[in-house]
Image (cartoon, rainbow, N blue to C red; front, side):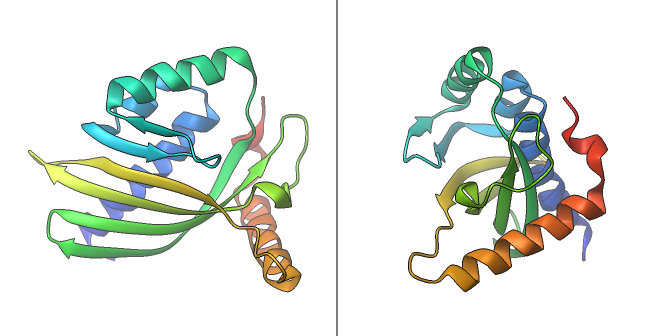
Length: 157
């Protein structure tokens, strides 16, 4: 893995960590000013300020489940444009296991500007695998293994 790929992987992890720590401003800072988010439920946000506002509302109203993610690939379309393909599961507050119904496939498009990698597009799509329960079970098992390998300190409230 080269240095730039590592930096893009860190950007993805920072996004999940900001969500897990319920830090709206920190999450918004990862986005370009005109970045786009397409949420798990199809909701859409455009711009870092919209991300900040929406996340503040979400985090103020309830404790959301926490992410555990696995980067599948990082592909560079150009030296300053990368696409991260990842999968993620969620751990509900007060539990230690992955909630299968919340598994997702995530795509993050990152752009490097002035030496900094920022998120241009982040899409979070449900990984239900309709009619293919074996695939859903395999992904959940893989995410459970990742959760165990990372230890519980990531998910303490």
